[in-house]
Image (tube, rainbow, N blue to C red; front, side, top):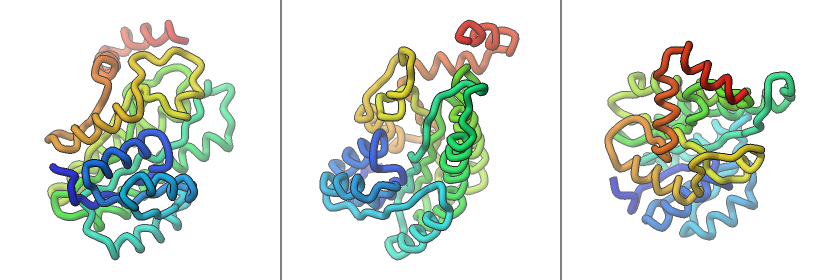
Length: 244
């Protein structure tokens, strides 16, 4: 898949991986529609992306996504719809802020679910629906609630959609490890194998040009967590217990 001339909608484009992906895809010749909650950030980004179209929306409010989908129908078909939007607030269960937890479930999980429901009709035959899970969804680690739980749900959702939307739409699951963004800056621990948003964007674009379902990176980290997931609980929970 060449990105030159491809029409791509990125939801969650205002910062972090989404913004880096928008810039990289614009340089590769893609025609972009950029969405997020912050219209000023989107306008500034669009100026770096060959005059990409801006479509502000709040993924936590289904009606704003539905309105954007209705507008984007005039530009369809899209070669890909990419949903990177997410909220992140690391906390142990005892310290959980109910309002923040509800917001994360609403944006991360329900927002992605609504993208999966409303956006496929906009995608051309053989095009891609790209959803962002996370390595944090592979296995429950201390201090990750409720973010990790929402990402585990997205990983599961994407797996089911592969069959449900086939063969017309190709579903891709992106599972990043640690990426240095304003969200992961909240972490108070060393982030192993952390990479830049630009490196993440390059890995995603490379993955989208290949066959396969999952795009995960950096592999020196993600493969270790996959191994942890493959172990019997008697071993894996003993290992994660040392992190607690």
